[in-house]
Picture: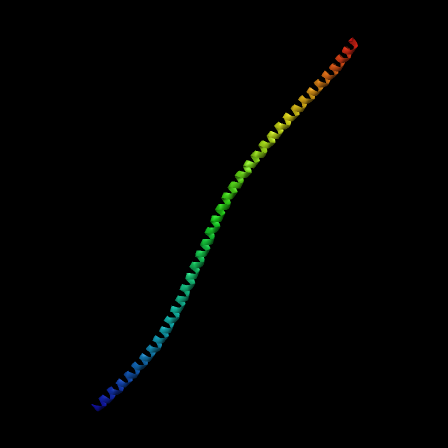
Length: 139
């Protein structure tokens, strides 16, 4: 019976050593697992920060695009105004040109009338001189 107890004691010691080795291995694996979990946690933290930075950058880019679009709308409005002013200016120039042509024609007509009046006055002066001459001859 002592041999059996001895044998059980040795088996118990062997089992205890095996359990101790298993526990040591588990501790080692647990430590490694904890290290990996910590590394993963740090990687996730870094990725989260990078993601937040990317979102912030996209927000700035979006704001920049919105500002550009707003600016383009303003430029489009200004071009519309400029086009309207250009059309008005062309119309005014065309009207001025037409008025100038009418004025030129009127001035030419007036000049012709003045020439006619001067010619008539010259005839009257000649006739008056002739009448004066006849009047002097009759005296």
